[in-house]
Amino acid sequence: MKKAVVLLNMGGARDKKELKKFLKNMFLDRRIIASPMRYIISFFITLLRTNKVWENYKLIGGSKIYEHTQNLVRKINTLAKGDYDIFFAMRYTTPTIADVFHDKNYDEVLLFPMYPHFSSTTTLSSFDDADKFFHDTKLLKIEHFFDDERFNEIIIDAIKKHHDGNAHLIFSAHSLPLSIAKRDIYEKHIRQHVEILSRQLESKNIRFADIHLAYQSKLGPIKWLGPSLDEVLKNIAPAPVVIYPISFTIDNSETDFELGIYYKNIAESFGITSYKLCKAQNDGDRFAEFIDEKIRESF
Image (cartoon, rainbow, N blue to C red; front, side, top):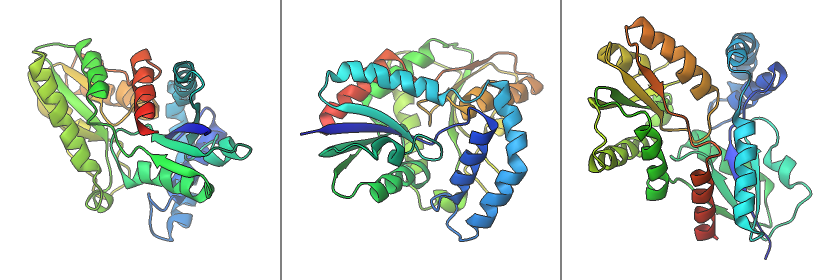
């Protein structure tokens, strides 16, 4: 039986043209904007934001999501030992699922989103894309893995590297509009994850002055999940902070630019002089091993 695994993510921009494609496709996604007005909204957002957003991407040298993911796939492929084939696909940029599988046939395909928490805007959107393409292939789906002890051990070790007993630990998650969040399980998963990690830190005697949950990446005048990261930073200033990007497994513009540059500047404006940012799992050996184990358990 031929088996394949595809790691699913949103995608990213390596150049301005790719950024334009990313923005257009994302805001055309009915899981992001349900209204038929999304066709007009997507056009204007792409028109008005491409140049501004690309300036941010230039500060980080373009998205590193492809580099990290390609390295991760290579490591998992070594661990697979021929038991399954491993690929990756992006939701809004290439390679898409259709790009990857247009000339391939498998009996089973495991969909492995790179999102630890389930959301209609990420996981379900990627599943929609796969369901439209695969018709005669058995699809297996991993819906979330935030509660997997092996995954959380990797997170704890990443936080431990930046441990400072005087610092405040902030788990930063990508926000959602309240109109979506109220019918989505994402916020519940995020809160459960923070509780799990807080207990594990306590059990390992890795103590912080306090632990917070904050949300980042809000866009526009509508109401989003909060508290926002800038609000939390302002409330705890000038205390030192350690930031962990809880909703990301692969570093991208939301971590490299937003957390690494934008919110760091905000923190410094509030008088916070110690601002430490944990990296996501990216292509770490232990993350590759975790994924391989999860794959073998899922087939």
